[in-house]
Image (cartoon, rainbow, N blue to C red; front, side):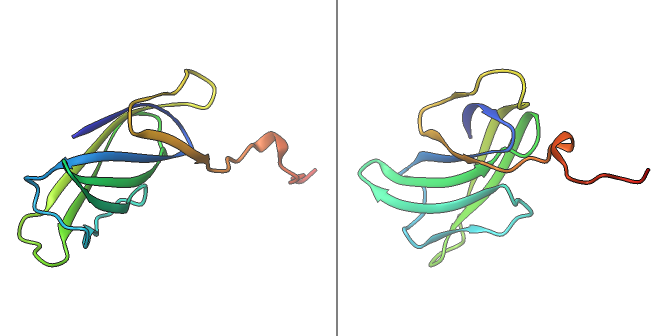
Length: 123
């Protein structure tokens, strides 16, 4: 389980973390399909301490969030690894993001602002 800190709603984050050598993964690993559109695996690479995993997350709802992703080897999927991400997502008007080590903001998603809409309505 990994905590990533305080995130801002509608922002996209790159999260990098280390899985220990004891995990049965390889570079040919993939994420097992789940109904999670907001957390996706980008890369997994062997390092001296285990495997460096890089994923992307879009902060899509406010409050305390818990997202899951399952990683499995394409060669041997008998021992998948469940990755759990926990974060506190702040609204766009309040709070200051505080990202923990291995987390960086890589962009924001466009937001709809009803006051800036060109739609005139009916009079």
